[in-house]
Image (cartoon, rainbow, N blue to C red):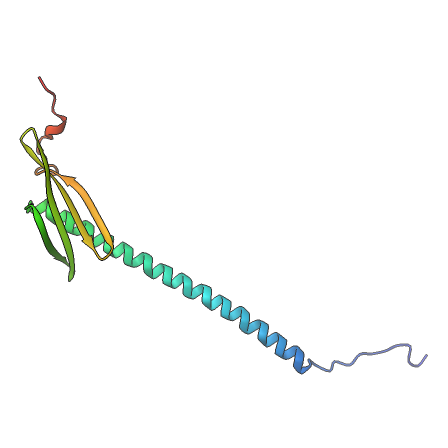
Length: 131
């Protein structure tokens, strides 16, 4: 009966097994760090785009509120950022001037149509009925 029951002794891991396990763990950790880094870069790009869009909206709001609409190309500053503003008079409809206003910051651009008094309770001449 001797020798029929074999008891395996726990000898631990061989050097090759340890090296393979360490290689797998380092590879997985590297991939995870790469994915996390990519997500942070994308998040940073999105936050920069949101910040620039907010600045463009604030400059547009400032132009409309002050009523400072002069045809031509100027620069406006908001939060120490220089924005290029191009105002073009398109046409006059029922004695009301219509302007195209384009504001650009870096690679972002915001364009809209505006006529004086359009946001401050003045009757809209484009929707008045003809008698």
